[in-house]
Amino acid sequence: MTSLRIEHHPVLNFPERKIVNFYFEGKQYQGYEGEPVAAALHAAGIRTLRRSPQKDRARGFFCAIGRCSSCIMEIDGQINTMTCITPLAEGMHVKMQKGHGHIEP
Amino acid sequence: MSRNTEVFVIGGGPAGLSAAHVAAKLGATTLLVDDSARVGGQLIKQTHRFFGSSNRDAGIRGITIADKLQQDVKEVSDRLTVLENTAAVGFYHNKEAGILSQKAYERVTYQTAIVCTGATENSLTFENNDLPGIYGAGGVQTLMNVHGIKPGQKILMIGSGNIGLIVSYQLIQAGVEVVGLVEGMPTIGGYLVHASKIRRLGVPIYTSHTILKALGTEGVEGAILSRVDEKFQPVPNTELEIKCDCICLAVGLTPLIDLFQQAQCRMVHVGELGGLVPLHDSSMRTTNPEIFVAGDASGIEEATTAILAGRIAGARAYEATHGKSAQAEAIVAEAREELRTLRSGSTGERIRWGRERVLKEVGEC
Ligand SMILES: Cc1cc2nc3c(=O)[nH]c(=O)nc-3n(C[C@H](O)[C@H](O)[C@H](O)COP(=O)(O)OP(=O)(O)OC[C@H]3O[C@@H](n4cnc5c(N)ncnc54)[C@H](O)[C@@H]3O)c2cc1C
Ligand code: FES
Image 1 (tube, protein in one colour):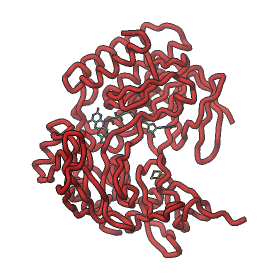
Image 2 (cartoon, rainbow over the protein chains, first blue to last red):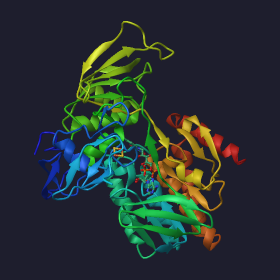
Image 3 (spheres, rainbow over the protein chains, first blue to last red):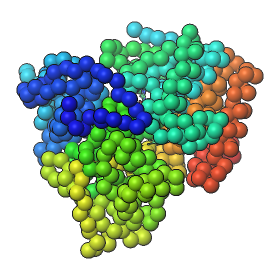
Image 4 (tube, protein in one colour):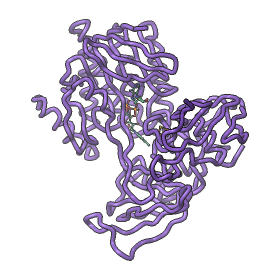
């Protein structure tokens, strides 16, 4: 996968994991099954995850442990999902979220 | 559904794991919940060899200490239930709490609760501090050491306390270029051993400097630094531009305390301990008699002291339902002695003041 994945580490070993396909804004990407969605996006070079409600500013993740809500996106139609703690699964559809998101009536 | 337990431990870092282990080993039925995918707290991200007491795992890597604590906990699995991916979301009256997992919300009734929720990271005010590519040190560690992904190729580190120094080193280990280490004070904040490692690797160190602005619109492309005077005010015409694709903030931690406030524990602000902390006595009991505290939630400190305070809280929580016990007393006495030694050096000075202030407030000092 991309160069942001750590290939060799002097202390840590990262076990082999299953590769799955997912979609970001309709385009297909690959990541490891079970890793956080935000991590898979980051490794694929995507770091703008949503736009702020008032000033339309680009936002990415910050804490990576489900505390700050900076990483919320729409996953399979579910808005305001914290992508830093949502495990990636085959066929997931991930979308950027504008502001507070929109629910179809 | 509802669950019933004698001791309810919230948070599975070194403090919570130790508390749960002791309580269950002494004979209490114990439930531990942690909201992350794997217990271990901060330890699962620490690849460096730990400082602290040699009785308590100094010189061992954080990840190895986490494995050891998880092993201890397995040993008492007949009395101890561990639920991962499960957050404690509220305390109610009548010794009742709520826990939430991806599957369900459940009620927990307990005799005593030990809250070991750790800390949250501080942010810093500067222009464009919300750009993608600006991460907390904990976020960087999680991405890198848990998920095996680099935050970027060139990173600027803000803060030279132990966390800033250690994470810089970990970034270099992972193959990221640390383009600078920025510190507002005239000298480096963390321990010399960590600082020299970073210096030897040639990382430029900017003491008496601050970050004025992050550059970029869709993500970080650089930063503007400036020198600061003794009052931390930027000195005009000393700006300098640094190219980087991400910025890491290692500017301190604040105890995670919302659950104590819900449980109506009295809080006190102690700067040396990182901000608001629940008042507690030397048994780690808060002003709500059924709630105990241990670890960073009681004041930002270290894993070794979190383990010891966790042992004290676990033993006292056991006694709260089962009555006085010589075995519990021995655990408390031993842990107190070790804590005293650990905090006695010059590096423990600030913490000692902070701890004494808390005990004074409860009239124990
Ligand atoms: C970079 C770095 C380097 C360090 N180096 C050292 C060192 O060399 N030596 C040393 O002694 N210490 C070191 N420390 C400090 C040490 O890691 C911490 O002091 C220690 O982990 C605190 O333990 P804890 O159990 O209180 O909290 P944590 O380890 O933070 O664990 C808290 C746990 O509670 C969980 N939690 C929080 N809220 C809830 C909730 N509502 N419901 C369920 N679960 C919840 C969290 O997910 C987490 O797993 C370092 C820390 C960092 C960040
Ligand atoms: S990055 Fe903070 S909640 Fe996801």
